Image (cartoon, rainbow, N blue to C red; front, top):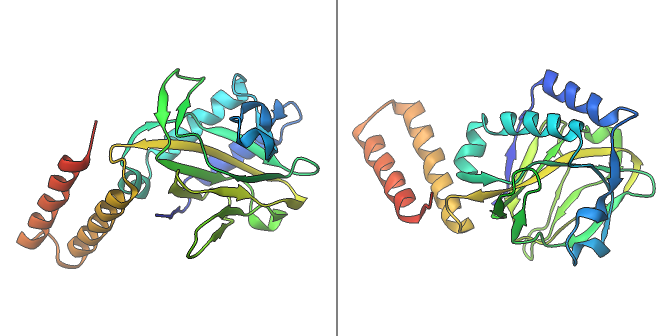
Amino acid sequence: MLIHLKQVLTADELAQARALLQANDAPWIAGAASAGGQARHVKNNQQLAQNSSTAATLRALVLAAIQRDPLYLSAALPKKIFNPLFNRYSGATNAYGAHVDNAILNSRATGERVRSDISCTLFFSDPAEYDGGELHIHDPYAAQNIKLPAGDAILYPGTRVHDVRPVTRGVRLASFFWIESMVRADEQRQLLFDLDMTLLALRRRHGESDEAMHLAGTYHNLLRMWGAT
């Protein structure tokens, strides 16, 4: 499933992040240096050096922001998060060809291994600031081209082939990371998310009721059946 998370960052957080990413001394390196064997051949962007103080500050900012978002928590049911990374697309380093993310990722920041059930891209540049740069998620039925407002994020299954289309004007700044969910299967997460959203709507319309209580029980019993902590 694809989930659009709106205003993950506050205006102050977005301004702070953009200032750090756009600073003259921001430590940008070739993005291909961090790619796996298959992706290295199609990755043509820049990435913020992971061991820099700038990256550490931004990681803390993004992690705090994403984990307070209730829609993210409902959709992802997070168990682990791979430390957020940061990229820049512009000029001659302006695209990332079609690829699939590695199934298991080893975080340099924490040493953890994280299964990439869900991918997330958090945008720092507004769509009007650059041309191209769409996150293209391949789908045999309805391919998606994602280009969200600054401060918004998209969640999508880590199993999907995807690419970033060439940026032909301006600069595209973003964070990207992966989530290992308590519920591995995308179809099961979708069912739980739909059930949670239905329960929320039911409570808003009718308040607490016997029906809402029983529906909540079904949700938690399914999570107990499918979840792993």
